[in-house]
Structure formats: structure tokens, C-alpha cells
Image (cartoon, rainbow, N blue to C red; front, side, top):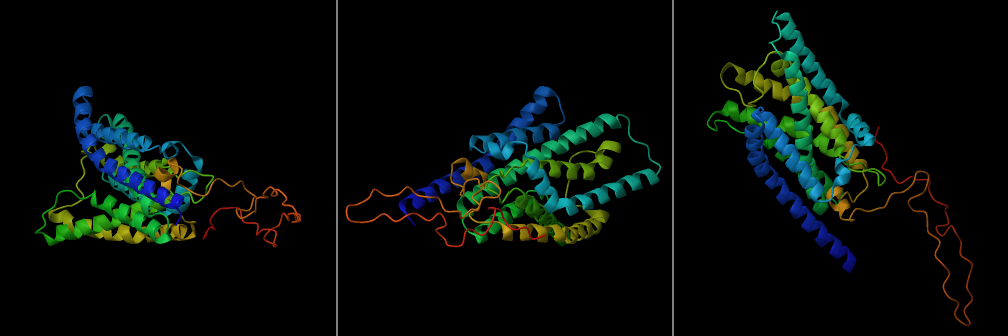
Amino acid sequence: MGQAGRVRKVASGRRAALALFLFVMAFFVEAALGESLSDALGIDYDLAYVAAGSIAATGFVALLGGWEMLRPDVASIRRMLRLGWWLLLVGAAMGVLDLHDFVSSGMAPEPGWVGRLAGVALLCLLIGIEEEAMFRGLLLHGLLARSGRTRTGVVLACVVSSLLFGLAHVSELDASDPVQLLQAALKVTQTGTYGFVLAAATLSGRPDESDSLFGPALFHGLDDFLAMFVSIGLMGESSEVSYVATGADAWPTVTLYAVLTILYLPSVVRAALWLRALDVPQLGGVARAEGGQAPPPVPDGVCRTQPTTLPAASPVEGVPVLPQDSDTNGAGGDGLEGRPSRPW
């Protein structure tokens, strides 16, 4: 490795450390600012908490120079749907089942349900923004800035960030209760597999596209809305959720998490194939903001390996200058367009 390569590696390591530090700090800012917003504006604490987290996480991503990760990007929506359409179908099916149970029970929506549905939609949108900026923008792309030079490092960054994403969804449990421990383990697995697909979707694989969080954030928010619109919007239940159940709900919860994990596997395989097809390095939006992401954008139809004609050297007395051949490879290029092959 040359001197320039060592300098870039050190710079990437520093930005990775800063991103991980800001990831941790986002939780503290979220808690402090959320309580202040709730008291000052008189709004629901959960909504204020998530809004504070969104402000902190996106602000820290911007502070790192990751503006490209925050801007609206249609390509990121297409990429997210390509990898995660099955996850959305599973979420929609569960939402339809919840609505069917609600209607067949003969219950009527609680008063003010229209306003509550709007509130749920806003809450879920903010959850998508917060968690994608926090776990994919800061954590995943922070790890990629250090480990994304190899394919193993890219996959490892996706796995680690997804595992921590799953762990963040388990808070209170009785460690002496084996059923609760089983629920927690399955919840981490279920949410982690979901997060793995979202992690893969933030990597564009093309130098002319950004590693935008826009598509995953919208997808995440919509999927959460499908899970909440009946219980919170129509039935008026609390938005505070416990992912570890007790009593009669314990074993049904175990079954639910196990079934969802199995149902998510097709999308997990699809995401793994996507990562396998990506070119490396994949240093993520944090390093790209520093100028550490290679290679530069390549227009469609132009071979990545197309040679650049160098200016002829000054003639030296007694040494003839040979004419340059524009096809220095002798093969005329291979027609590649500088993008990863699609495994589907």
C-alpha cells in the first residue's frame, strides 16, 4: 500500500470512529430532546421522542457530510422495492388480517380515529427516518468506512449493524424466564433479518447513484404503519409497544416471531445475492462524503476499463516517438457499463 493509500485508510478509520461515536450520542440526544419537546409542545411523548431521534440522527449524518444519503432519490425507492417487496407483502397481509379481525368482531372505531390514523402515519414516517439514519446512516455506513474495502467486510458490516438493530428492539425482560428469553432471541433474529435487507438496499452498487436512505426510510415507515394502523389508529391502543409478552400471549408471540423470520428468508437471500454482486470497495456514504469512495461516476455505455490516451512524451534526441494506439489493451474493451451484475 502506497503512502496515499495509507493516508486514505487512516482518514476512513477516523470517520468511522466519529460516525460510531455520533451513533451512540444520538440515543442520548433523543432522550433529552424528546422529553423537552413533549413538555414544550404538549404532544404525545412517543411522537416527541421519535421526532427528537429523527432530528438527532439526520443532523449527525449531515454533520458527517452525508447529504447525499439524505436527499430524495427515486433510484433508492426502486432498489428497496426490488430487494424488499416480499417483506412489504408480508406486512400488508398481516395488516389485512388485523383489519379482518377488527371488522368481524363487530367493533366500531374509537372516536377520533381519523386524526389518530394521521398521527400514526406521522409517527411511522418519523420512525423510518430515525432508525434508518441511525442504524444504516451512522452505524452501517460508519462501519463500511473502515471495513468496506473487502466483500467480507461489507457483509460483516451489514450483519453487525442488523444484529444491533435487532437488539435495540428488546428492552425489558425477565432473564430467569426461558420463554421470555426465547422471545427475545427470536425478536432479535426476526428484526435483524429485516434490517439486513434494509442495509443491503442502502448500497447502490453504482458510482453514479448515491447510497440514499430515502427509499429504506419510506419503506420502513410504510411497513410499520401496516402493523399499527388497526391497533393504534382504529382501536385507540397505546403506541408504547413491548416485544416480549407474558402469560397467555407468550407462546403465540414465540410462534409469530419464528414464522416471520422464516417468511423473511426469500428477501434475505435476495439481499445476500445483491451484496455478492456489488463491486468492492463499498466504503459507504460517510467515506464518500470525504472523497474516499472509488471509483468516480461512469456514464452509461462507457467501459470502466477504457484506456485514457496519454499525451506523447517530449522527444529525446536519437529516440523515435512511436504513434500511440488508442486500443492499448488490444481487445477494444468488453462493453461493461461500470455497474454490478444483477442476480435476477
